Image (cartoon, rainbow, N blue to C red):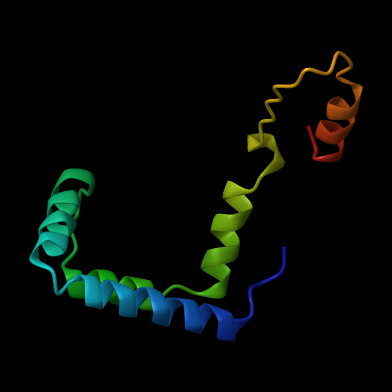
Length: 98
């Protein structure tokens, strides 16, 4: 799997940090952020620390997550169809790695 272009990574991080910063102007957003940090994290982060963590994401990090998430062993195919012959779907599943 190839690395995403560095310019695309930078632009995406900038967009995510920008929209997150704008959303943080709403006190209900910050309340939800800190509430979820307390509920879901063993080590809650401050809002500023979370932005720093987002800004530190690299193309290699993205590729690592993509390799984990997009493994063909995790793919599942469900078909609901009036067709009686499953052969075309089985061929497709085989091509997809299953």
